[in-house]
Image 1 (tube, rainbow, N blue to C red):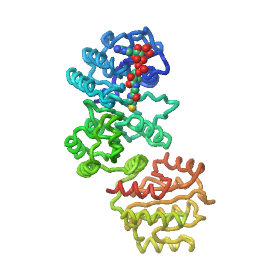
Image 2: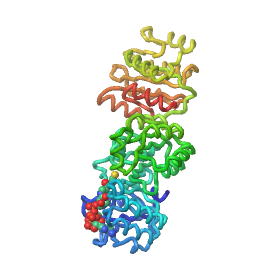
Image 3: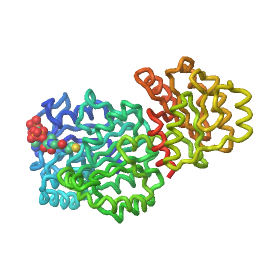
Image 4: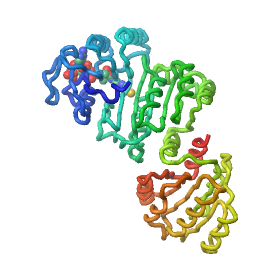
Length: 439
Ligand code: COA
């Protein structure tokens, strides 16, 4: 599988001079960003973007580790035959027009051809791969339209290319760091289990997000997931009757009854996200938080209403609110102004400054009666300034932050996130992600 992510040489079959064509965008992207050797393949051209062009991979003398194919479906099998003869063992087949449109014969022929030449194929009907660490990028969505995330440790496997890439764009905007993104389409001979197995061994990946429409081999999937040590957060498309009808014409997947999937996910210890947004919220906790010893949460806030809403959320989600130890209560009663509520939620009130937060957080971190701190920081109040960052040092207990607000708050939030803190827009987001993280 490694040749899908760090090949020494790549052929782009269907590379084109025409800027509007997918083969052009993929080729341009790879030669601009990737360090390995890149060969454009097109029988009509001598040169593309100043690179010598070859009529077929068979005319390239050097070894080719990976072929990215963007020719129409009717030409794809011939192209793959030449890849087989050239001993290319990894291909990414972007092309649509197989079983997702009912073309089962062509998909079967493709399957047999891949088997004959022992070729591993990502796709067809996919975007392929984006590797933030090696910079291999086969997504045909230009960078001026879709921002790529920075290097990080989330890997995202998506059966849907468009859904996956839109989320990649948003994740990049929100500052999530990625290891790999894999859009795998129809999954003809590589499916979710193959990618999961690979990512489990990938040192750059810490947490795996997975969007699936249908699982090809359920038993293998459960076996694989049980072996995997890294957290897998899954979301399933096609949970309803109408949704599952749509998966057939999207990736040609049989969605099946959602209850069966839910059972399989439970057996496999997967974390099931309730929404696409939540999938990344949970991933954020795995990336940034140390493992808590228990589930007791202490809430600290500078807004009373926010404290109440958070306490409600915790109780409704069966997450226990911690009880302050007598020592902590005594110490804080002595050191904090009388107007503060020393309880859970702990209200530091609207004129809280960095010093007050430092005292409350530091004391609660030392209190053995809690395992997790949920800190609400409403930065609109006059005395909260960016120097509050200084108080969030590396701790053994997870600290989740909630910051709600417009432009200024979002900028402030970004600064804290750049320091590796998990910040959420709403208490509800933090609580629900925490619930999934703890299970
Ligand atoms: N070897 C090398 N190049 C070949 C070839 C072959 N055997 N056969 C054709 N080509 C060249 C063509 O000449 C063309 O280059 P040109 O612009 O210089 O003429 C290039 O490959 C592309 O072929 P073309 O016929 O122009 O196809 P296209 O670019 O319009 O469409 C696909 C090709 C793959 C993009 C299209 O069939 C497709 O599948 N689109 C949907 C992709 C998609 O949505 N995937 C799922 C994402 S989630």
